[in-house]
Length: 310
Image 1 (cartoon, helix red, strand yellow):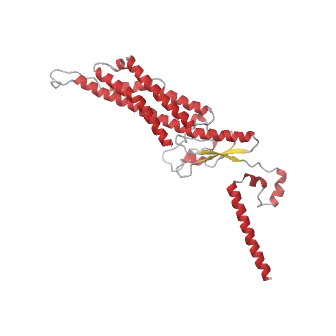
Image 2 (cartoon, rainbow, N blue to C red):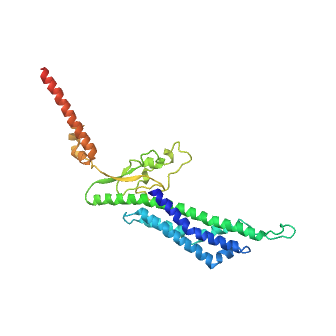
Image 3 (cartoon, helix red, strand yellow):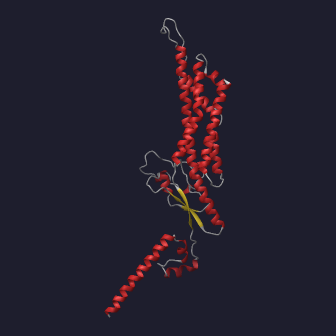
């Protein structure tokens, strides 16, 4: 599903910019004696690039919103949409790419006695320049599509975190004692930094940043010396980085026993408290009950054998 969405976003961005690439290349080729400044000063070229960027931005914006889904509104979503807007805000970066491509093919003129008879150096240079400009626009499309896909992936994981945080805070307001726990992917493909957070449990409003492994904890991981920088300095849950597959989980927090009960608890060491039973997962509880029943049955068999022998 995620791969399909990423592929669709790439196709949408490229489809928005491909006509602009063809049009600018056509104008470049039709004006062999023009300059890059004259090309970009043309109202039709400026309008074509601006419209193409606007369509590409709409596709990227929609992809991020779809990835966010029905998660509650959160500042992270608005930051992500601001990132998309910045990528497509005005044709400045695209104009720079066109200028560089234009300058990569210098103008050539027909020189009597040097140029081949019947050749058209100016037209040939214009054709090469047009091809370079077209490649530059399409290359820009691939670059912004990649960046947009990363933003979309961050939105998807961040939305899951926002949902879990909202559920956990609702339980806190209802009077439950809960905390949040970072869970790294279990297929062995988690990065060193995410693995260092696996199982870390903190308060619902606390940051995981203090628990992130530092450079001193890194051994045998190549050239990585610093952990990924959390998105906008916040780390209330995944993602830690693009393509992060970690998730957040709300767990019940068992309150500490009052100091006055310590001596009595020491005498009953080895027994499970009522609070521990209430916080126990259902599968584990059923397993313990089944084990105790089997143990009682076995004990009954042993006692019965002893009685029959006596």
